[in-house]
Length: 186
Image 1 (tube, rainbow, N blue to C red):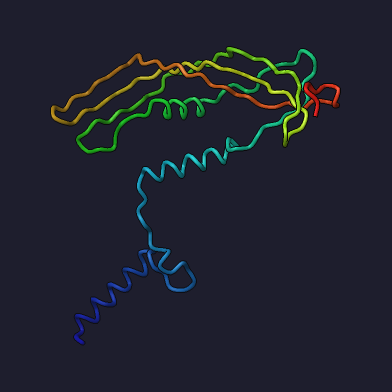
Image 2: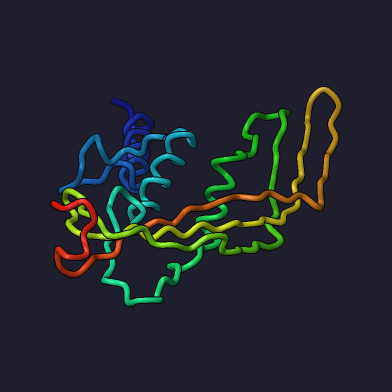
């Protein structure tokens, strides 16, 4: 083996070890080598983590009992909830080179309570005696929408006064006192 081959091999081994991809000692072995993830799947993982972090999973919200005349709606939808609903209902395009890419610049969000009422008490399996509290919101999103088209003739379309109206329902349960409050029996 020549000296040149030995030096090149040592430099290659040193580069691989120092790069962080493969480290000597305890580690993940072949699992420590990074693997690229498609942005499509990455967005799905981020959505699941966002819902889990904020408690928007399949959990049922059961709040304490409501006093007479205390039918006040829960917190209005957050800006994050409204923007995520806008992305689901009207997704933006993009990601294809020389294709069409759309951007949104949010200018403002208005949230209006439309309806707030409580159903009569009844028995729900798995929850017990409870009432459903319905709160319906109308959310108006003002934004600027910019679309860059790259093929066949590159140009930009700009809608500075775009408006989208979204309706969000925030329903939850309230516990009820004794069995005399239950409609329909157990």
